[in-house]
Amino acid sequence: MKPVIEEWLDNCIKKLNTGELTEVDLRGVTIALNSQKQLLLYLYSKSTNLRSPLGGWALYDATVPDEPILPSQDAPYASVLDAVSDGWRIVQFPRPELYNFTDVDNAYLGYEFILEKLV
Image (cartoon, rainbow, N blue to C red; front, top):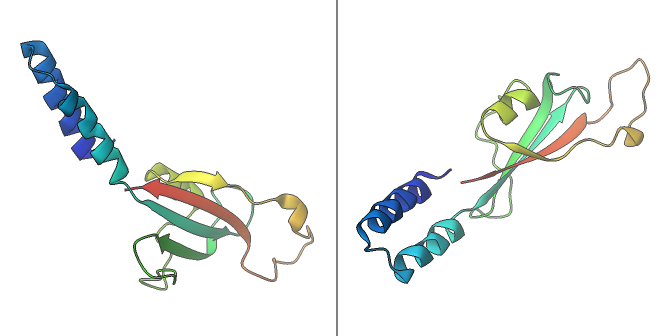
């Protein structure tokens, strides 16, 4: 949970216990919730296994122009599972029927996982 929301809830609980809680206090959560933005992280894995190494990645931030963010050539995580452990939520798993299962590596970027994080 965002620290600002946790702080808001703590203040409301204190005011509730002292009988000072108002409608304005309760409506304050709307401001905190609406201040969140969604980040999208595209991770291209070597397989559908969440522990597989990554072959590519891109980060999209809704507050930045239309281009993806590539702050370095190094992926921010070693695997999809590492990203999930850091708070990213999987929005889309790769669709295996789109890939040719042969003994050669996938010719393009790999298995696309789309993840989101609200910040």
